[in-house]
Length: 141
Image (cartoon, rainbow, N blue to C red; front, side, top):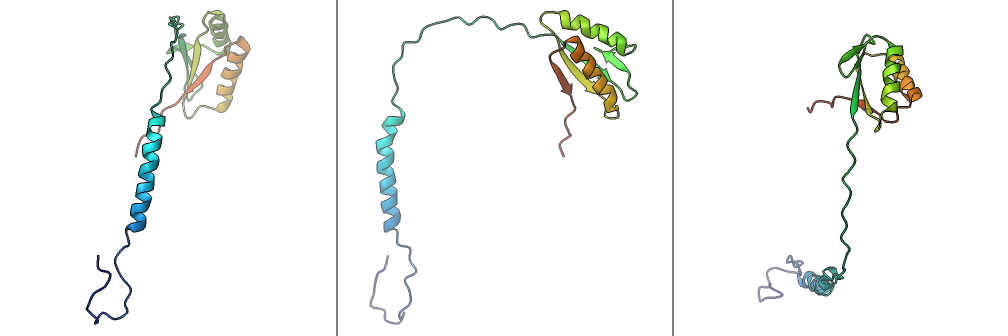
């Protein structure tokens, strides 16, 4: 790092070298801060925790897949259902089971919303508490 010299030809041009003294000062301050705070981060408290056995998780409830095709035909676990009143009977039976099964509703893209709304209303009236919608993810481009 040249602060001066005997070469007078350069004139009064500004010095083009970076002054690293402030950078070193900041780095030393940060180093001291990290040296002081590092032991505080690793400080732990000795605890004597009790041992307990967690009960086995409840069985995962059965899932019922209800599919509706573009024409409005209903399928209960891939078995055709004649009409909405027959479906209501299956909903009533499923609502009485313990644990109550989850209803996974799959509908074709071209299905009218009215058909889906009627099925959801029938499931709600029967007492089905958990209804989920099954969709296909968009393909990655």
